[in-house]
Image (cartoon, rainbow, N blue to C red; front, side, top):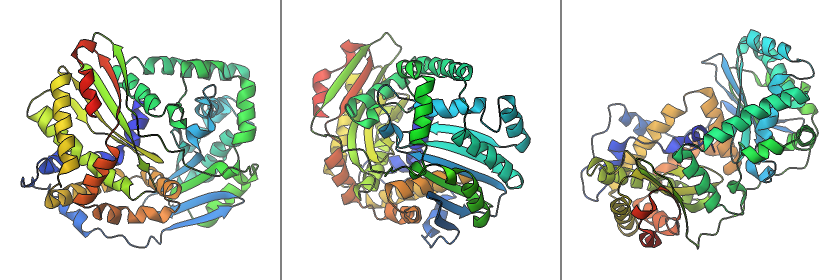
Length: 458
């Protein structure tokens, strides 16, 4: 993943450190909540009468009617993500959609750009591990014409040779730059190490090698075989009537071949082995990340681990950054996918002392119960942060899509708050014991400063 996409996939785990560090030690009194935090205590899950799900000619559609704004977010999710790829076709979906901006059957070359600008719409591409999002942001008054352009790019891209080569050069250039920063390299190698032999080891954005070798004929074949209705989920949030949306889909994407795709999560990852990759570089600081395999998103442990990583992040911040100033960046990340992933991350000039502190905090999380009052405050902060990060229509569309895909029901989004509140100190400890083990580490920096034997304790 790129840093931007990865940050987005973890957006629900970004917490205010004041709340997380309030349960850094059992029995320590909690820090005061911000003035707006008590609002979350009044949030209750209720029936979502504004959201409906229906089928249009074999295309699954979720619509959340929001009349408060005339800006409409329409996301097309091409399901499967990296499960549709091979090492040779990494990045092909993003490549194809990017090339569609150069012209389509009904909007050749500059006509496409001019028509898009006239509607005031914005079309985005977000390749992710479980799907590719082809997103449309449009005004209610120009939705019909914006949708026509949007759908034409999916159904009828011309993919002329010169346009394909131009887009290829841009994507290869971006891929070559991506791994120049140690942070990006660290996370890419970390994913590949944890998911060796699994789909998540592949890159949805593509590599220099894969993007450089994908031919025009391969793109055309992928378009005809993979852009099918059974792979499509449309989620629309905004002020649009169901009848209008049905008509738009029926006239365009509803005419695509059905295909026989069925979503399934990737196979589980073996969690009985450790691994280490060391890259020697002369840097001002040393970079370290360690990933472990978590539960599937359908598991009750998913939210328990999500909260456990938030607790651990707060403790790391307190002990490693605030008290000892050993790092400017320390975290216990939670990567939200169909198969959850957690880990530890730090940049530090003193890896040995930092790892010792990390292991100590992890031991405490796995053996002792967190303070119940502090946990409740942390969950409230989490909920507040969630609502703040789901204010836009596009954010709500993504949340509905995750619920529909990971939980099998878009209405699971309504239960998110209650599910978080049900996490108890015993659940946090159990999740830490069950999943926070057998880390796969990647280290970039001075190898002489890394206590390799100590990593066996993780």
